[in-house]
Amino acid sequence: MGVLDTCTYIDLGLLDPAALPKIPELTAVTMAELHQGVAMAKDAAVRATRTEKLGAAIVDFVPLPFDGEAAARYGTLVALVLSAKRDPRPRRMDLMIAAIASSRGLPLYTRNADDLIGLGNMVEVVAV
Image (cartoon, rainbow, N blue to C red; front, side, top):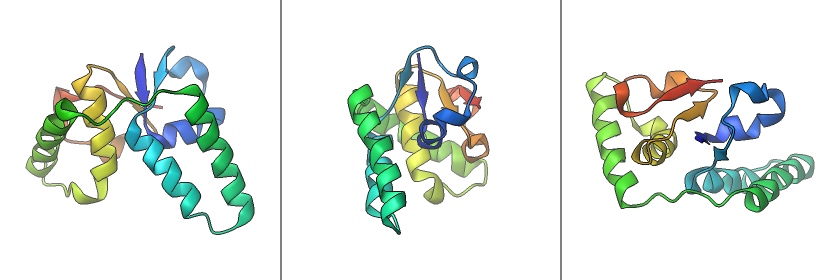
């Protein structure tokens, strides 16, 4: 099992399935980002494509929640990012997804591993 971050889920068709978890998971944060993408689409064609991707996620996944354990881990991850002299604010959503994965002991599969620098061994980050 492993958690797909939002960009990994969006790019699934471009990725080698062998590089991904056999049992992929999505988080409630990713679902929120997918809803945001539909709402912010600039034209009908983009909105339609994003709606299809969101619809597939809703059908295929029961999202992992951002619960109390994830909230506590999020605070830890923010502290680690700050100690690495990085700004956690532009990485909030990524850090929330990482916190969900970390609190469940699951690896996080991402296309943006650089956004998660400084988390040490709190999260297993798998770059795809």
